[in-house]
Length: 523
Image (cartoon, rainbow, N blue to C red; front, top):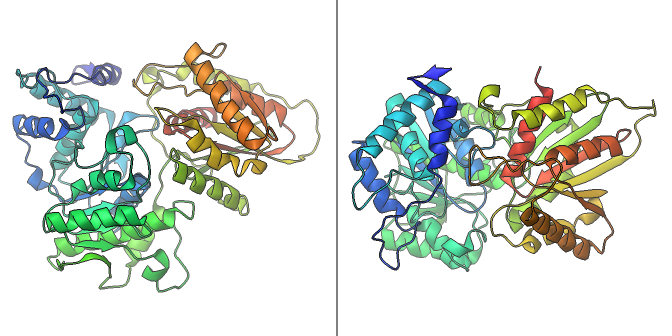
């Protein structure tokens, strides 16, 4: 189907080309792609005649939990009657997930319209200093600003892409700033110490704008937040615990699973309260550097309803695959740092104590089949389950746990697998397999159901070796050439058992698995 003379697939192809990095020709020696972001974004915004002062923004940076915090803020404020815009990254299945209005991904027609209008404006603004149009993340950030302005949202919740100080989103004047838990990630860009990393994250603080840090920050990170807040004259608060917010009474229902989400939830409640106070001109800018944030009023019923309704696909998500008498439950979490992996395994273990929490609802938007690069591969898996027959009537037997793992980027396998291996006794089998999707492309597929490439084989074999050495080979481990092969092996090997599958290590792996489950379960 065509929108404004272009199909959605044509639009994705054009967007895909922007992933190629074209740096300005005259970069100074100390300039990097990251440090060029803010200058480039200011140029593009000026060329597009965008007035960002029309947006009232909650800006959130951090290592862990910033997406969850943003999503919780959106749900709270939408359920409180405000029109919301939400910009997060990365997406799991469809790029439109990144830009949501009132919780709903931008419709294809609107996405295509804004893409080509932005593209034309940026194409016409190229010059010697900026010889190419905005690269992928910058372009989507500009698109989100444009859409939120046109939609006249009451509040835009913007998640930082990477770091903070030099991030493409750091061209806005927020109403309130949020800082989630700090840990080690992207050290090649942000620095090797928590102090350096926290300094980059704190770079989104603004003069006289309240900043709120999540509770329980490591001292190095908190010290840097306090230092930066003092330098830029930003009142800095720390969120109380969720128990303190609700006066140590019974907690309301919280839609996001996992104990670690309680920290993100308490920060989100503080950010929403601070935003509402500012909107109502009742915020109090104190000369505070790290004091605990206090609420003037009890948490509203609207906010409580927003907490219960909050969903964030691929993070603490549980999906039952009840096909052909198989009893398989998938636990999906895109944890990809050592700390978040530890939280993930803890969530997996505790979730099994109450299996009634398993949900089979799939709320992720998916592209239409004609737009889907992976449809033939996914159809193959659905056909497999359509024709799957359990060969005997044996009753369900053992409780089996399986780990499916991969990671992307330059992370050290041992930093992720060793925290997992400490709970190695939980797993009866561990599978290492590649993602379907290519992290450097919207459309390219790494799928090869019969053969791994040499780099894939080397990486996955190394992952297996790290795991075997850490677990003293007590757990069965293996390498599979695809997610399809992994799921099929689990279904055949444990067809008479109650199986729980933890998929983690990469949001791309989780997104690919989620897309397949969606396709299998589609009517």
